[in-house]
Image 1: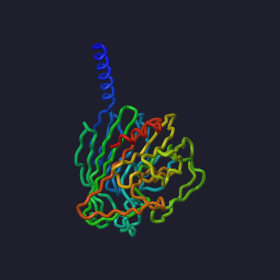
Image 2: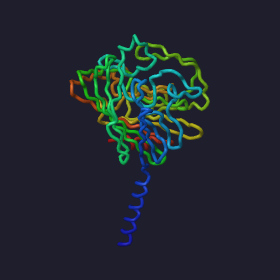
Image 3: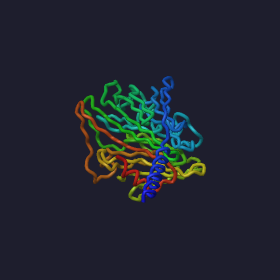
Image 4: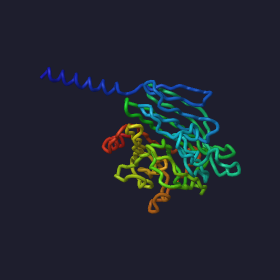
Length: 339
């Protein structure tokens, strides 16, 4: 019996050590001149937190799998052949919203005419608060401002970067503190968004025109569909473009790129307002989850309207998982354990 317990304990310790060893080492490389912080897992580039002055928000760009494949679109920063050139505000992975005191933070970009800028808000980088490679955390600070630089919200964003050799993940905890009275009104343009590589789109079959929140037309021509094979699904078993407007604790997007199956998933957190969130996932490459959509997505939903008094805060937590052929069971387990 004693030998059995010793053997069992040794086996347990061996499994524990093996599991622990799978956790990849995170490191950061600051590039002040390039206005970015690069994030490495086991010495390989995973992503970069970028904060250039010519963008109206900060984002994580590019995002790369453990095998070295881009999951993010290159345009408008580094266009690649056969990409769509629509929606220039879709860069990497970002967080913002389409109606904050009536201002549109989501659609703002270099493409907006100067005369129209007063209708839009911007997120201004302030500082890197802290970096902790041992915990894989990067904390940043920014202000949500109007065209006159009046501050509506202060944002403290905590990123947690993790990897186990095959699967990589990004947790974003967004704490917003009101600097004046701020109202969020239901809007489809939000909340955490990712613009994916062409592989993960649905094949284009005809010329298409999309309207942004302000009714501005964006024409999208038929593109080369070679290798384009993305398919969405959610926790309820809804597939394809039908996931749009549906509420779900997670939505996944699967594609095969250069012979490799890759799944990208966005997980909502149970503590978020209006959990589970509505999906704002589109076949042309926008993959977003929105906790503040409300009746824009479902006319039978309760009205979404959040008012913050000066000094009050609201926090959102989301997780992006990038792996291989992630099953529903795996995603359900990840969602269950997403505390």
